[in-house]
Every structure is written in C-alpha cells, then in structure tokens.
Image (cartoon, rainbow, N blue to C red; front, side, top):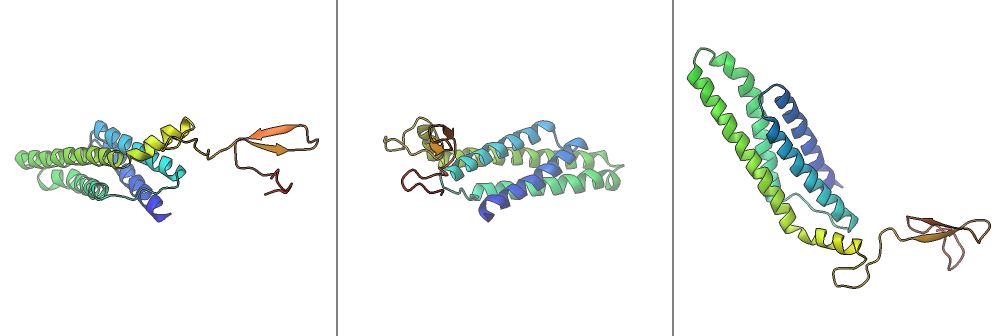
Length: 178
C-alpha cells in the first residue's frame, strides 16, 4: 500500500506547488504540462500493473526526479520572492537568478521525461500483458483468464439469468452464495 500511495502523495504535493508557481509567473506552463503528463502516464502504468497483481515501486530515476522537483520548487519559491528584494538594484544578479531557474527547470523536465521513458522501458511487459489479456490471450499464447468474468447469477425465477461483470456471487456447483 505504501509503495503505491507514497509516490502519489509526493506527486500531489509537488504538482500543487508547481501550479501555484505557474500562477505566480515563476514557472512556465509547458513545464508543468510535461510533468503532469508524465505523472499521469506512469500512474496509469501502475494501475494496469496492479490489475495484473504487480506493484511497480519507485525506481532510482524516479527518486532523483522527485528530489529535483523539490529543489526546483524551493528555489523558485525562495529566489522568486527574495531575489527582487535582495538584488533589486543589481539587474545582473537578477538575470543570473533567472538563468539558474531556467537551468533547473530544464533539468527537471529532462529527468522527468527520462524517468518516465525508463519506467515504460523496464515495465513494457505490463503493457504487453494488458494487450494480450484484452485480446483474451496470456503472454504464452493460451486463453487468459479474465479478471472480470461473465458470470450467471440465478435469480427467482431460475430461468432469468442476469449477466454481471464481476466475480460470481452465486456458485452453480453447490448452490450457495459466495
């Protein structure tokens, strides 16, 4: 549970701060959109993996990405508000702070894309298995068991079957409710 929820909490915290920084004009919109797209893609991959009974833990690049995002948020929050106060009369120093902010932003976008590609490269079998299962085949070519089999629930009168898309509630073998 923690392997799944902890990265989601980090993402929510970082993205909410980045959206705020975008609103303040300290972070470009395109950077937040790229970061958000990567986060949604990786979370989607994790959801597919959970459906297959697997948990994709955070990798080393993902942790570097998170730390880089935190450094970016802290730098922009501190430098974005303090630089004009400290260096207001020295435009060269303001320009240096802006350049450092851009360098960190580009690094964060690059490591975000890199770590996203790495997650998909390392877990490509999750996508392949999802495609095969959607076609009704397992990875070895046999018919795959469905996670949501069509089952028959016998109601009164017994000649009216209702098909449900969830595991069986009624066992036809022994006539009992599961």
